[in-house]
Amino acid sequence: MENIRILIVEDESLVARDIENMVKSLGYKVCGTATTGDEAVENAARFRPDLMLMDVVIKGTLDGIAAAEKIWEAFHIPIIYVTAYADDQTLKRAKTTEPFGYILKPFDERELKIAIEMAFYKSRMGMKLKEREEWLSALVKSIGDGVIATDNQGLVTFMNPLAEKLTGWRQEEALRKSLSEVFTALEVPQEAEDSENPPLEVRVEEGKFLPEFILCARDGKRFPIEETKMPISNSHLGGSGHVLVFRDISARKHAEIELKKSWERLHEALEGTIQAMALTIEIRDPYTAGHQRRVSKLSCAIARELGMSEEQVEGIRVAGDIHDIGKIYVPAEILSKPGQITAIEYGIIKTHPQVGFDILKTIKFPWPVAKIVLQHHERLDGSGYPLALSGDQILKEARILSVADIVEAMSSHRPYRPAQGIGKALEEVVQNKGLFYDIDVVEACVKLFQEKNFRFDDKVPPIP
Image (cartoon, rainbow, N blue to C red):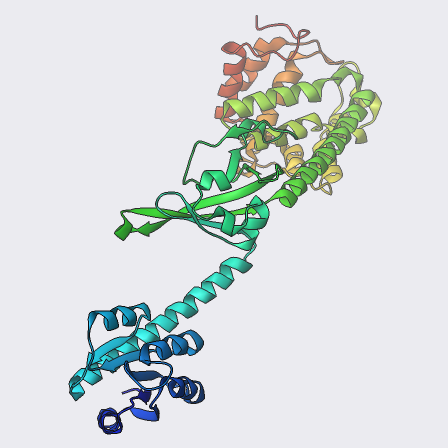
């Protein structure tokens, strides 16, 4: 049993002694007594009991009910009324003070015990609830999000300080108003997200997390927010209210715009660097001018035909644009030599994938560009160069590039031979699919030319 401290207020000494003896016999502690309302208030402040037994009719300027009102307001001490009077007027006055119990004289120990235990339990639960409410209130008021609560009719019942600041409405003004009157948020259309001044459309979806909104504050100011809306069940009221949580994301959106601009500048610089590399090779080897660009075009088309992501396609495009960068190491007289080249000269040419890899490996591309360039002359059966890789050792991107490379090279003019045409080039890759070349890649390549009318450019003759 908890050691409950009780203050007894009773102006009849014999009755007071009986109540005190009864309280002690039940195992509780009597911390003090009082005979008047004023004394009850003074002793409540002095002893701070856990509970008070208060006679309704007592001597002094304050009766029991008036004293109870002061004590509860000042100290929040639970009070049980103990009286022989139970007329309607007394009960009506007593109810207004929300007592924790009401027992009529005479009573026995069992009645008193039940009243004390119930009052103490109710008081303890009430205090815990009050502490939780205060904790929750402090939390909601201090968080970095605006919070608005509504009842089951959609009327505002609560706004935290940040919600007041963001919307421009004070809580006392917003209470019992419709949420739509206090909180006006317009959805940003998806297609307009990249615009600096996107058009605004009225939001039509409720109860869904849609992060892109523009909040229209009371003063006319508009700014982007994130919001989420959650229901609060009120089954006893026949419906549910909602809690709306939102935050100003102006700073984040500004940072996103700046980051996007920065990325675009970096991408432009990277693209310029890639094109400069490609141009360097084409200047040294005019006979293969445009070869890298055309290989890149076909490689990207094959990758899309195979269902690869646009991110992978972009990596293939970059690798295709500079896949022959290693030829910068090959003497120009070999690159432009008419007629058949010697075995030694071919050996020098075969170094260009490794040289290209060595040039590109230090550049931190978001794709495996250096490895694609290194492997674009490898063959599935291991007969390629420079590492004689085979099967799955070769990147999918490199397999695509190798097919596009051979098709473009055979269909174009070279110093040591005339153009052989698209038909001959496709015949080469079809005959060797599964041996030298990836089957899926070859089939996608053939489909592009034969069914989808793919062409490198106007200068390359169509399939005969």
